[in-house]
Image (cartoon, rainbow, N blue to C red; front, side, top):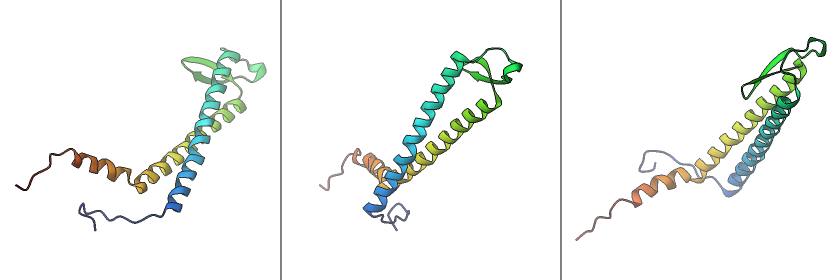
Amino acid sequence: MSPTGMEFTVVNAAQLRSLRSLSLFLVLPGLLGLIVSATISVHYLDTLPKLPHPEELRMTARNIHGTIVYQTAEEDRRLTLMEDSSVAVFLVGLGLGLVYLWKWGIVDALGAGEDDLAPEKSNS
């Protein structure tokens, strides 16, 4: 047991490297997916009609930055799927990154930094 009452396990460098790699492998594609879906949304804002067009099956409303555009149900399904899956992949990668930082000892290093700022007591 450590003086703080928390038990720590030793993690080897190979496990940390693989955890960091997996985290980056998920965070970066998640961010890329969010950027692509935002680009598609802006494109939809410029190109899709602002009123419903039943003959084109554009009856599904989407609010993009306060402007309502109408799209097909398939366009809505694809964009929603892209947005939701990108967020999920990003959050899983972020969670693994936080585990990596916790295992690496950043939390302990930050906590020890506060003790370093305290004035030292002399024994004289």
